[in-house]
Length: 368
Figure: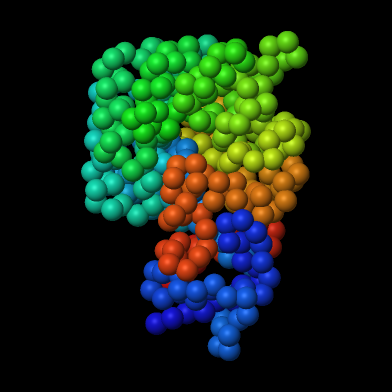
């Protein structure tokens, strides 16, 4: 049965429109028209494509880790669908080689099973710079070896998307080039590298940076570092716009320096979609307090953030609402080559739509 919706505003992945109607039959969008036909359902608020989050460490009480299997990945994805995400990249932070191999296999099985909302896998580490470990266990950080390279290249052939965050200090430009050639989406992060080294890594094939400003060399006037390489270049970069990881003034600078290429991530942990006030990470307790996730010593350990709140914060920092919505939908979808399925509202697409209030607060996924 066809359902025709007439929202106050429709965000199609690029622009906000008034006076549009969306027809849905089952799980598909059948038409998008400029005039609402007779019998259309008025829908207060904004209809938009579901969010696309490329950095999800956990959710629904679970972390991606040693005990992760296809069923637990499905649970995490389902938790994020309830938070407005049409698709996510479950993210494994630095761990042992055998855990990495196990999570890769679990994600392959979950992808083959058609797990709703599963876009692929993001491996954040272990090939990082221990000087910029953040909440990652420094004892598990290590340079990339040939067997690591082979494992990642093989995984890229079997996964819909494989994103790998690494530091230039732990790899060679040739390894970056080989990963890129194999189809890996290489991101620079947790790095203390120089501007020149960052640019060499981007030239070798790296395409983006992980959580811009956080756990990386900062921009100084004679040593611009990885932040300077991103703000002065063409690479994409994720932002944790929670007002904790990045000051609003820095968000504003980034938005002005890079009119395109920036996108939003939640960097969320097990507590996402739950009322948990703490959880365990590699034997260390992570505390949830007043919108922050920290180790007992105060070190930030992921974020307690929903993407609708990130959108609100990026608007407050100077982005117009359409750009902010694109940073959580069409921009990350295009980056991973999934914009034919996610991030836009158009005939033939799946009806993975969400409804937001006019202040950009998520009301929820569009009910079937």
